[in-house]
Image (cartoon, helix red, strand yellow):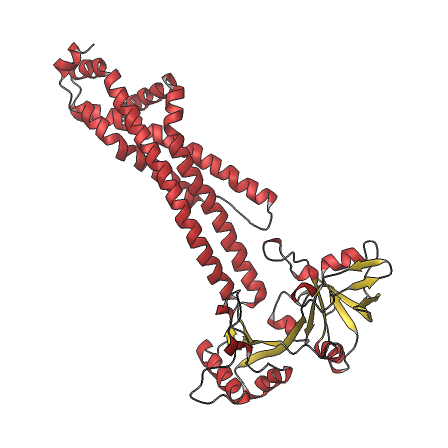
Amino acid sequence: MSGGELRENLSIALETLRTHKVRSGLTVLGIVIGVTSVISVAAVIDGLNAYIARRVEEMGSRTYYISRFSMSAGFGRVPEKIRKRKYLHPSDAAYLRERCPSLEIATAFSGRPLGPSRPAMKLNEIRYRNELVDNAILRGVEPEIGAAIPLFDVGHGRFISQFDEDHARNVIVIGQAIAEALFPHIDPLGRKVRLNGREFEVIGVFREDPGLFGGPGMDQVAAIPLSTFRKHYPEIREFMIAFVIRRGVPTEAGMTEVIDAMRRRRRVAYNEENDFDIFTPDFLSDLWNQLTSALVILTSVISSIGLLVGGIGVMNIMLISVTERTMEIGVRKAIGARRSDIRAQFLMEATVLSLTGGIVGILLGAVVAYLVRRFIPYIPADVSLLWVALGVTISIGVGLFFGYYPANRAAGLDPIVCLRYE
């Protein structure tokens, strides 16, 4: 097909769309729905993937955690054999530092559960004069925690020092939300607050971190030295250990060294399974991938139905167009048009029809991505060129696939019969 023929067929196709605006619009509606769902969901998932990846990095991409509980235990009742495991202890972190040369950091930390999870336990309250923050997330940490978990990054002031830890000082680092609630108009550093009735000096404020999907984050956290935490809350026996394997040390070698040391420390028999679990922030990515896989399947089904309906609509309108333009087909064949010319003309019309639906779908998908990014800032949803190209390809593919039968039927009509058609 020459360039002139291509332009002529394209102009005829566009004229057909202009002539039957309502019919064409209803025809491509299914394609619009299908492409919009593909583009918008892909943009949101890409944005969420980037958000989860950044969150994992903030939790320490090279950081591993030792816990008495298993992350695979789920959200239901913890099995009895896990509940009966021996508690971890802060001295376990010191033991790992001494016995595992492959480790760069090993540090213990703990937390005080909130009231709802322990009905007999009061909420973590922080007061300053007449201002009150309740339900704060209280953590007892060692100075090394910031190097192991980047989330513990101080934006103003300083973090807990080894001197604070050694002397069990009543110092506290608070989150941004806590600082703004207690000290809306003054600098919190050096101020004395009361944490659950005890006086603490504010030495730092964590950098802003609203949390995962807007949930509790470092903005709601208050951290005190682990030694101070143990002194004031001796009833809390649940501890975790964060460790970082030195760069250049193979991960498997470092993990094996830690597991062997912990088994010796906890006197686990050679033929028994570990009575502790080790996990990384990757569990968050794995959980997210499981959730998004179901979302992708659902979106694929919806998109497929929309594209199928749209494709059938394109085929239907093209069959009607063939019938309405039977005389025109006869005239074109009578003056020398070949079967391939007629087929190309109607295929071009079907492709333009579906491509129009695809372009509208891409634009609507971009609007959805913008709205998500505008109203949910932590989800950087954006339409990539890859998905735009995929949307265009899908649209053209639908037009060619569902437009071939009507085009082939038009190309096979007998010119004499067409000229006699009324």
